[in-house]
Amino acid sequence: MTSVTFKAFRAIDDPDACHRFIQGHRRVLEIFDIAMITSNKPDWISHPNTYVILVESVDDGRAMGGARVQIADNIMALPIEDAVGKVDKKIYEIVKNHRLGLTGEACGLWNSREIAGYGIGSFFLTRACIALAHQLGLKSLFALAAPSTVKIATNAGFSIERSLGKEGFFNYPKLDLVATAMIVQNVLTLGAASEEDREHIFDLMKNPDQVRKESGPKGELKIIYNLSLKNLKKEV
Image (cartoon, rainbow, N blue to C red; front, side, top):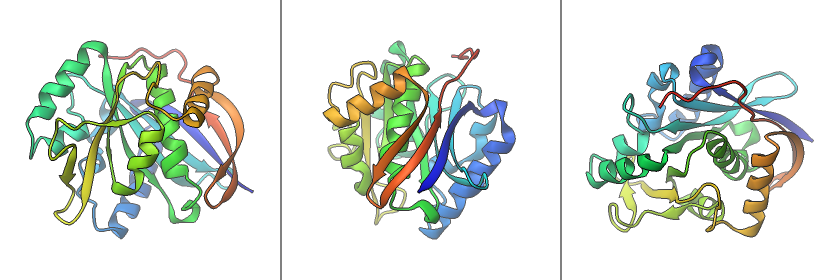
């Protein structure tokens, strides 16, 4: 059975792990010729309000996937602002309004080819990001989804932000690709989530450090969740 750890940490607290995240993410993006996407910029390593979930192999510690939760602040724009703002300026006002209740973005989701098909870079990291957002005190959470992950994000509690672009859809990061602007309106209640996803995420919120046997499209895997962030202060 494939075994991995999901380790959460603040970016500025572990630069080495951040560089491993970036190298792995970039390799995946280069395969699809989309290394220019806004979430691939390395500036977030020194951003005090960026938090990382790094997926590592239990066997040899290799970085095999990851995601980030970036809190919206006055220091760095969210990746969705940089991406969507080029075609629809309304994104800035929408993010600004949500900042009143504390908001952020789940971004930079990726997984290596070795674990492709297990759902790590889609199902499980999406759920973990929402649980981490709750731990950080966020009320809402943005994301920019590829066509293949819109349904997964919807099940996890995201809805399409149809006030942006063409009913929420954009040509990004290239003209022949489509991205969808999405948002969890209430991280605490997850009213739009499926029952299965809501139960899973609520369990991670309650118990951020746990071991679960998960069932993905490619088969079973063991995930060691280390999502708790102890003794940290958010710098918003």
